[in-house]
Length: 281
Ligand code: IPD
Ligand code: CA
Ligand code: CA
Ligand code: CA
Image 1 (cartoon, rainbow, N blue to C red):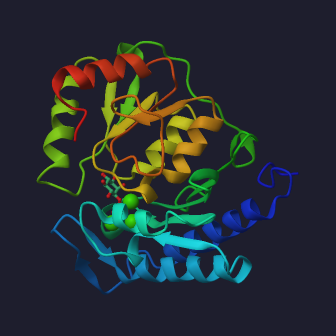
Image 2: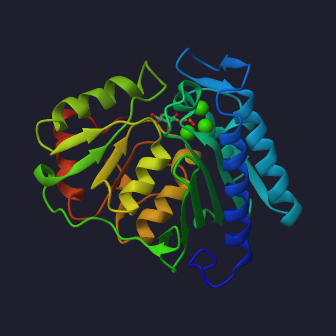
């Protein structure tokens, strides 16, 4: 058992194989794509590789599980609330795959090697499998509900810092420049002097995987969509961390403003975000 099989459950195996296949394909296309489009704003990029990867992922999954539902970023109407309506329409699904074919498209477009494939499977609204694949470093992050979280087959656990001042935290500059970005900037400004440092590397999913792996003490971002967080949320919970919204409510698929930590710094981070008005809408 290489640790990826986690008991050989087929959902997880399909998620892993699909993420690895898509990730390798995305990497092979790096620098070769010809179509750069904007979705709802000049900060919201999409290439034919995003679309091609989503099609590939959707086809692979439906070969194995034709009866399952599928939610992918490139399959829904663009907009700052893109996943909300789609999630509502899919709320009856038993098994729902939630996919971000490339998380970190802006990085991908610039050749900044910080982009991933994120694949989650939810059963009746609860994430039961989460896989994030980083093709630049060939790192596969896997979690299955109740079975722990693994990177490259090795068990992961969150970091041990228990004060913000000792913590390295991640955040983002959301594509929604009108609403989410100003709130997130408020938080970044307030937190910067209170933490060891902040990293904003342009892939929410990879930051979440790094929280699970103990490489970041925590992460928060305002205005995310379900496909940015679904897989990462399970990785962190299975690695012993905590995932809520920025007001401390438990994580669910509808969460937009996420706060994910090693657990120890959760309350302090929440308090600081609350004090500066950085908890969002
Ligand atoms: C984006 C990335 C980015 C975050 C944005 C997301 P995409 O996803 O995760 O880090 O700041 O809010 O939309 O568009 O590259 O899949
Ligand atoms: Ca996008
Ligand atoms: Ca994303
Ligand atoms: Ca994406």
